[in-house]
Image (cartoon, rainbow, N blue to C red; front, side, top):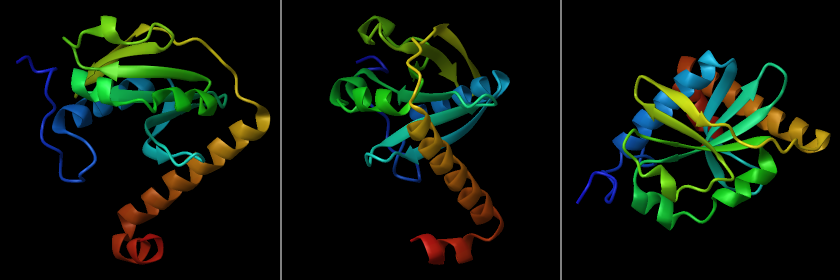
Length: 161
C-alpha cells in the first residue's frame, strides 16, 4: 500500500493523524504569509467543524479542508457544506497525494509541516454580509477563548467543558 491509501494513527488530541497535523501546520504557515489569520478546528453554525478557517485583513473567509490520505477523502461527504460558510473553499494535501481525485471546483494547496503552496486558486463566491459577520464573530470568539486558555487553561476548561 502507498502512504495515501491508509491513514495514520490519531494524534494526542484524537482529532487528527500526525500527517493531517503536519499538513494543517504548513497550510497555516502559508496562509499567514498570504496575510490571513487562521483558526483550526472551528465549529460552524451548521455544527460541522472546519479544519482551518482563514480570515484576511479585508474580511475574506477561506475554509481549507485537510486530507491526509485517499481513504480520508473518499469517506468524507461533508466538505460541500463548507461552501456556504466561506468565500473560497480549498483542499490541502501533502506532496505526492493523487490530486486528480480532488474536485476541480475547489482550490488546492500542497503542504507539509514547514509550509505550502497554492497550486490552484479557489473560485470566489462572496458571502452575504450577515453570514460573514456571524462567521467573523465565531472566529474571533474562538480565537480569544483559545488565547485565554493558553494563559489560564484550568479556569477556561471549567467554563467551556
